Image (cartoon, rainbow, N blue to C red; front, side):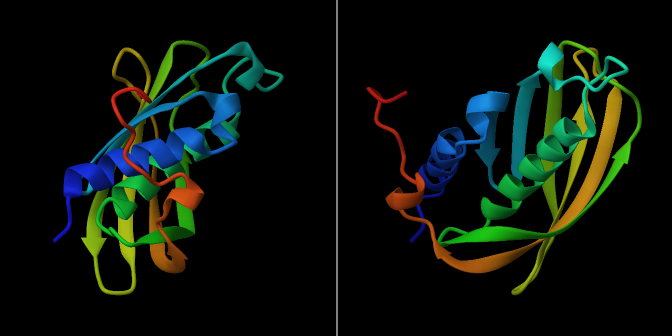
Length: 152
């Protein structure tokens, strides 16, 4: 029997341990079929015209959809097989909020979408992705473990 709450906390821990997140410093919350993350937009995320680079949008869309998808797979790491991203408006400062949710779950493929919002709640981007189960087990060696109260 799966302890879903432990699975969600372990996914959050794995996310926080990923080396790339030292740079972006996002925060994530995972529940069944859903993930929400926030990224504080900094000047060093900007392109030459003074707004957040598309790489920040992509990361937020992919991460929110990915963790929504992996929330339904308790044993294996999922892999992004495709992402389609739509840029709707720029963001220069404040908080980027990504909300990912699973829209289809089959034996071989999970489809999840993400919507991006600014601090005022305006939609700034959206995307949809497909995710496949890998052969990589979710283990403490890849940062997948529920933190104790002392580790939080």
